[in-house]
Every structure is written in C-alpha cells, then in structure tokens.
Length: 306
Image 1: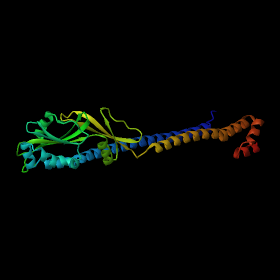
Image 2: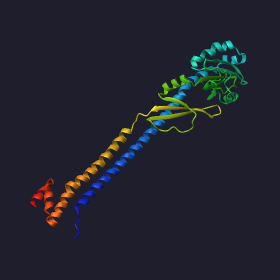
Image 3: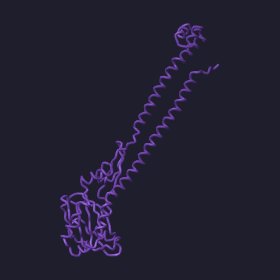
Image 4: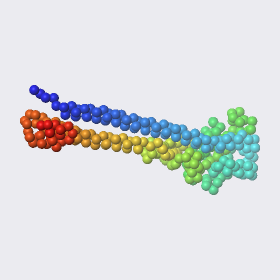
C-alpha cells in the first residue's frame, strides 16, 4: 500500500503561499516603478510648461516698451532727421529701462543709423539685413544670434506713427532693435526667476533622467528659425521613490530568509519526529525511540509512550 506522506503536503502549502506572496510583491514593485515614471513625466511636463511661460514673461516688458517706442511720431521724425542728440537723450537713456545691452535704429532702407550700447557690446552694426526684411512682414520679432561678444536675444519692431498702434495702416518708416547679451548676469537672473539651474548647450540629444533632477529645454532660434543654442533648465525632483524601492528589496530579502528558516524548522520539528515515529512503528527501533524522547512537544511525549 502506498502511503501518502504529510510532509510534502506541508511543503506544498508553504511554497504555494510563497508563490502568492512573490506574485504580490512583484505586482507592488511594478506598480511602484510605474507610478515613479508617471510622477516624473508629469513633473517634467509641468516644469517645461512653467519654464516656457516664465521665459516668455521675462521678455514681455521689452515687447511692451518697444511697441510703445516704435509707435511714436517723434521716432518717425528721428528716422527722417537722424537727430543723434534726440536719440541719445531720449532712446539712449532707456538702456536701464529695457535692461538691455544694445539699442539700435535702422532706416527704411535697412541701413544702420545709430546705436546706444553698454560696455559689454563693442559691435556697432549687429542686425543682418535679412532679419530686418523679415521684420518688415511682421512688425515685431524676437530671435537669437551669435556675435563676437556671445549669444544675444534680439527683439525688433518696425517704426510707425502714433495713430497706427497695430502697425498695419502705414508702411514702416524704420526699424528699432533691443538686444540683450545672454551672459552670466542674464543666466543668473533667469535662474532666480525660474528657480532652476541653467546651462547653455548646443547638443540636440535628449536630456536623461538622473540624480533626482527634472529637466526642461528651450531652443533659441535665429531669424531663419534655425537653432542657435539650447537653454537647459535643471531642478531638483523632490519626489523620491528610492526609499520605497529599498523597502521592497528588504521585504523580499526578509521573505527569502524566513522561507529558508521555515523549511529548516519544519524539517526539524515535524518531518524528523514523524520519520522517527514511522521507524518505531515499522521496526520497533529503540534508537529511534530514544531520539524521539529528545524531541520537543507532543513528539517527546509520544516517545515516552513507546
């Protein structure tokens, strides 16, 4: 007669429970990784939107001021008279208002007239004629370009009389450009505005996740809409999942150790005494009876009965 042993059933119960636990663990692990990626993607998109809005907002005062200055009858008269005294006393004094490094005026033929500049910019005639031609079509433009002093932001507007605020009733009388140098001071001010660390990059590769950081990038294009440079914004990613992952690893480690201990103790406390009882009942082995007496619990009592 084949005897169905109990110990394999106990082992089957232990392993079945273990498989269920391991499945539950990996489901939790997968969910945690998935949530981490979703939170990171959401934070990155939010950061990217925030950076783009703040970057546009940073140039808004310049766009408002240049629109006011270029819808001005006196500026129209200057293009005709080229009165340098008026320009230097009126427009040239607005460098601090614009927080700019260069204010340049061009006539209707796209020829340079005059400029007012900070000590940072030595170049006199900065704006390419093609960029001025593009401005003739739109009335207002913003682009970036490289000059000997570095990368610059250029905001330009066509000059019209005061009664043409939308710049669509009259032809341009000339052109006016406001230039900011993207130097260390500019980057520092932008870092304070965006609460992020900023680097300039010419690489077209995607920025990777790492070191608890989120990234956003703004491409700075020239008047041909071709890339000049890229601003990389970096901010701390304050939602950390490392501790959760570590805890999950510790849980699975503790589970494996517990499984090994359970298998060892089950064999010692259950399988070994049952094996002794089987040997006593089948053969009357006195050595087995002696060993059974030295076991614990009910099995020791059964040994004394034998």
